[in-house]
Length: 246
Ligand code: 6PG
Figure 1 (tube, rainbow, N blue to C red):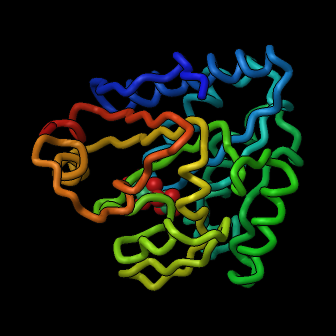
Figure 2: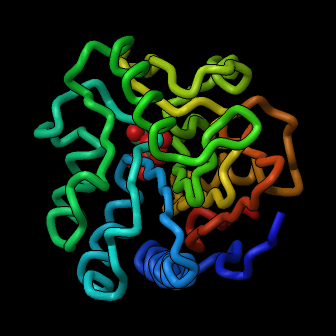
Figure 3: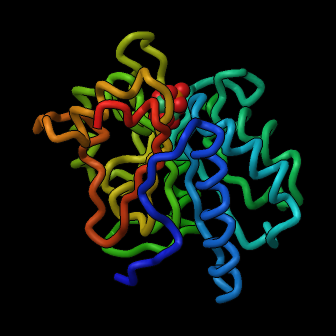
């Protein structure tokens, strides 16, 4: 595995500075990969944390690269229509993709308004039709993850660690509190990626990060603790509030 020097685990002053640094490093990496005439395959998470990252990229870097070499997928999606303000694709489209010159065919959203079981199957097929495969699973160049206050990541929630063992590429999961259906990449796909970065900010994540990354390491079963690529690199982009107890 080629260790790349584009990314680095780091703690920055606040959510904006953390997102700015990650945006800068992502664009640098994309430029390098494009210069090697390679298409780049990225899977984005949703939630609130990455929204600042999407806004920074669209406002600061819209003209920085040839977006036609990048293909964007989603780590997970809520089973809602793209017009919903809960839609991970809808949010990213409104904040980023509608503001940069990227061919629409380079966007590969999960169709949240389709039948979930059929959509998980369809989406897996779309991934396999585009993303290179190694060791039976697609290899994303970059996967951006967040972490919920319960230690979930993607839409793999506590108690659903079987989604780290399945050979399926995608799965239907349920939010444990709301019962909302989700479609998610499975653990083996995430752990097959070349670069995975957690973007985690805010004091609400501090206690959990202490459990997951701190000296008081609990050998817990949080899904966010199961991210450990065999052939890739894992990075943490944290602000001071989230890292306060480390
Ligand atoms: C989602 C995300 C999910 C998210 C965490 C953190 O669909 O909600 O993919 O995994 O990354 O829930 O969400 P916040 O950034 O809103 O805290």
